[in-house]
Image (tube, rainbow, N blue to C red; front, side, top):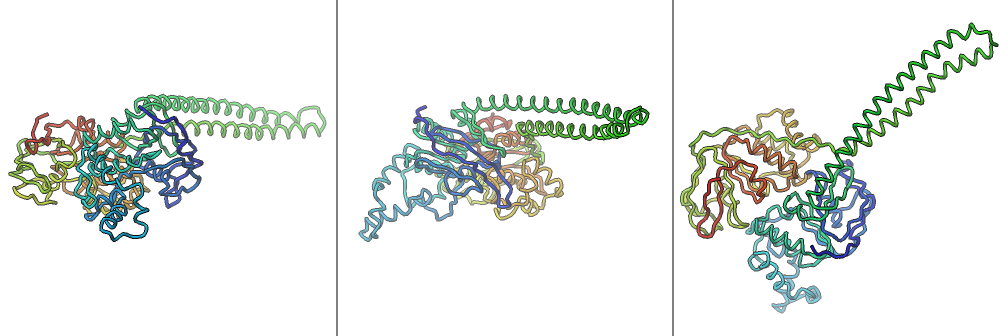
Length: 540
């Protein structure tokens, strides 16, 4: 990999991020980020997006400050795209293209010429960047909503790289990228000169990164090497921390036993002194002195023992803080078993909107487990929406005679102003609130988060909430449609969802570019877009 000589890009001084409630999300962080390629990992909700926004200067920290050196560009994991959003608006170039249009029409404003300085060849540069990313030529007025999520992300990455910033801040850039898009991104990232901090759960990408930063509530820790090196070092740290905790716990138990014996012995000696001092042939003032000392000795021992006990407790607490709370992510996945041969889905001469391909005829019978693969923009998400009846086909027929649940990749069915508990009540869930809270806690959606509006949750937490809403309904699901279900999920949560889906008793149709995830689903069939036909079927 070619990288610049390392120099400071960010210096974090006691940086703290807090919720509106005043609760601390992370910090204080004190760290220097140098001009190199780094991955940023952490559990869902740990604050990765918050940290990137703080570094980008979009948000202000609760405490502390950041020194920034050089130019930077931030690419968010989620963009607000309305049906009217143009490509120029998506990339932040709408003012430039509007100015160029006014100049070309001869009706320009006073500052239009100055605004275009350095951007007269913007169209040509975008066309070249889009071609390198296997995107069609850039059209400023083209509607961004007509592109797939992966195509929009590629366009945003093209625009970010064109600026040639000193530092890139990227939040989950590969979530929606297909195989070709990921390989393109991996290639440009590893040969880029300049610093990059990329928050990601993409295992393939993490394997390419020479440094990993882990964000936890207690701080930001740096590990040299790629993800495999990080796991090895982190496991070694955790084993050492657990050994230190075990040693401190054992030492406290032994010391307490010794202190108790010393205390009991002191009590016996004091009692013996008080019983015999009156029989001694000594002056009365000496007798008073002996009695006073006998009474003070247990108090002195108690004070000494209390200090030792506090020191032992402090040692244990410090050791416990170094041991990460590794509570497993658990996901309970209800469903209704489908008999072999039962009709699940029938498509006859189906022509999809916005997809110029041959008519599709295909069917699912019984508990088939199907992966739908293909490049960005080929129509995978459109097909799922047609199956659900959310979009009408241009021609043909689609019949789904079983109960179906659908999770779309943009979570568009969610009202972000409502909490996950409110959504579940609207879905008429049969689970009592206590059971719901327990299951949500197993997903690491804690009691303080299940009543927050979904807009206040991280992308991964929001996706877990969406999965809960589509699956914990009153009517058990027989056909489950999932569109990129692991986007935004941390690795522990991805593993939990993978394990739960592997035992789902109904039929499954899943769109994903995460091959490691697909391999764990016990698939029975794989469907893939091809040039000559809309999809080709292969039995796994």
